[in-house]
Image (cartoon, rainbow, N blue to C red; front, side, top):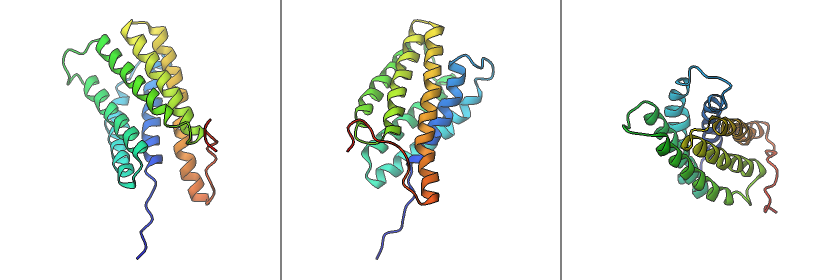
Length: 187
């Protein structure tokens, strides 16, 4: 009996992360200032729910890194959604800032796990921990310039994540190896 081929859940998780991050980062950068509520549906469903699902599918496939990453960032987007909706009372800039910095610390630790993977994933996590730290610090000290810098790095993060996810879809459909580059410690 042969095992049925299963789809790779990583492109779904990376795409949900990338699109939601891109939209929010456009607002965080100051490129757009009105209509930030547009990101809420994305946070709940594409950034949140789709990544939670991708995480569960990575767990089922035995990919611990993918499971932890997608499930954690999916939970982040769900937290963002309920926070922005005002469901959690008493959230202050300092509280949001410390959450963002904590996610930066988590992401920095996860970044070390990409050193032997591929350049796409390595770059995505590198840019993401920088984004979290800039947003967290900027929010805590109420410095819009630092938040804007985090927004611009967030846009780059989204581009790196989208490339990393979508190149896998395109490469599979063309029957070629995805050009993701070599991470610093990969062979």
